[in-house]
Structure formats: structure tokens, C-alpha cells
Image 1 (cartoon, rainbow, N blue to C red):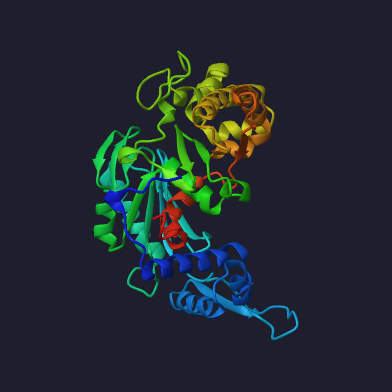
Image 2: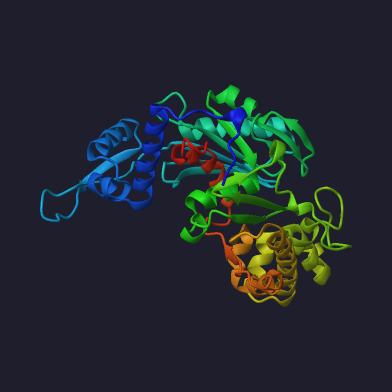
Length: 399
């Protein structure tokens, strides 16, 4: 039972009720498409005329389209509806320590166009390249209707101001990323931490058992380790967006690499992609002088059966599991989703993670599902897009 916040309370007006009904109808189309007006009316208990009025508004806004007649159940064949598939609606910008990807997406979350570049250590140069790609991919000045730009960054963000407070990898401090990009594109810009963004994408576009869980944690394994927390179907951000920095919890000593904060006892220093590569190079010292190895190359070699790569990845997975077990004990989520390149080697790492997390379940409590993300190896890109798209589907009452 949620306590009403009187400092931010708004009485329900007729317009509020209309907005809520509109979002309910839009989400029925999204989840059950193709679907008819009559089916929506039956499922929602709304008047048929109310549903028809809402659908006409959604069609006018370019959110829903008619796709032809369905099967007759005895009377006139119903007209079926779906989300409007044509055209870009949102831009996603995924900034990582190595690459930055800019992509356009339609309302259903399908990526239409994307391009990447090496992230520049200077934030201003990265901003310039992002703006250039946004203009290129959206054809600014044409008839493309873009709702906004979502930006995912690997660090601490204040989502209210759009300021990146701290990006440890580049030592970027107090970067007004939202204002800088918005001023040069004339588009609204929404910024969030990469793990929060990926968790939002799981909530709206992930597998059904994750979308329906409502209480889950997203663990993103990349250059670092990030966690996004979803409570009751909403991202939990904490004060100034600082919640979820579990990558810095202490899980051991003398890690194979430094955390982005400089310490060698953080979860990130034991469980990140950088930690896996460091272990591999320790076991394969001759590789240091050969071709540079990154996390993706290490995973490829592990999948090919190279013993040193398999061992390094398994040890890293064990530490991922140790961290997840702490999250389970402290937060008791229904599900934990693991995202990032490591999902492509799930068959090699699942056992080591499950061995650690299995010890976290207390007597009488149900086991917690630990699942790989289905959003690909770059869930943070889908997360960046979701920062814009989720606003189209979210309930006005929960906003």
C-alpha cells in the first residue's frame, strides 16, 4: 500500500481519467496486437464508444493503425489494430567507455538505423559526434517526427537535471549532457545511468516473465558492473539517481584489476569484463604481446573451447554470482536479469552463477530466477531508446 505524498498530490480530474483510459487502450494494442475495438472494450470493460473515441485519437497521433479485417464471429468482420510500425519515433544514444552508438527506433522498439564511433575522452567532442549522427539519422529539417533523444551513460546521473554527475572511466564531472545535446538538436533529451536504462528496456521490451515480474534487478556486465532496480514496475533511482551502485560493494580483496573508482575490492573489480580479460592475460602471459584482447574476443575463445578463456570466464561468472547473491539477500527480487556480451556465453557461465546464488535462498522462500537478457549484447542501446518510448506507454498515474 503506497502512502500518498501530499507534497506532490493531484486530485483526479476528468482529464486524468481520460489519460489513464487512453494509456490502458494503447497498452492493450501494444500487448495484444492485432486486436479489435470490440476485444478491447470486452477486456477493459470500457464503453465501446469510449474505446472508439480513444482509438481515433491514437490514430490521429500516429500511434495506432488499422491493418485490415479479422475473422468474423457471427457478425461483421472486426477491424484489427496494431502499433503504427512506420517511421522513426525516438533516438537512442548509448555512450560506453569504448563506443558510442546512435540509433533511431519506431514505436515498437525496433531499431531502424544505427551508427557507432569510438567514444572520445573529451566530452565536448563526443557531444559533437552525437549531434552530427542524430542529424544524419533523423534527417533533421525533413518530415521525420522525433519525440526525443534518450541517452544512456556509464556513470552517476541526475535524471531530473540531465547532468552526468560522474563518469569514472573518463573522469567526466558535472557534464550537462541533456542541455548540450538538446540545444543543438531542438529535441527533448532524457538521460539516465546505463543499468537503469537497460532495466527500463527489460520492463517494457524484455521477455514476458521479466515484464510481468514487477520486482526485478538488472545486472549489466560491461567494462564495469551496473545494476538497475525495478520495484513495483518502476525504476528505483534514489536521491539524485544514485541508487544501484552495487558495483562498488566489497566482495573480496586483491582483485585482478582495479575498479573504476581505483579500488581492488569492489564487485566491479572481480566481475566485470575487464576483470575477465585480466584473469585471461594472467593465465596466458604470451597473449600480452600478441593481438589485444577485449571481453568479446575472450568470450569467442571460450566458446571455441580454449581452456584459459573458459577458466577466466568461469571465475568471473562465480564472482558475478556472489554479487547477485548479496542482492538477493538484501532486496529479495523475484527475478535477476543479466545483460551484456556475457549472455552469448550463457551455457558456460550459468552453472557458476547458479552455484553462488543458490546459497542465497532462505528456507521457506521461493528461489529467484537468474535469466539472461533477451535484448541482445547491447541492452543499454535499447535502454536509451526506452527512455523516450516508455513515456508513450506509461500510466499517467504512475508518471
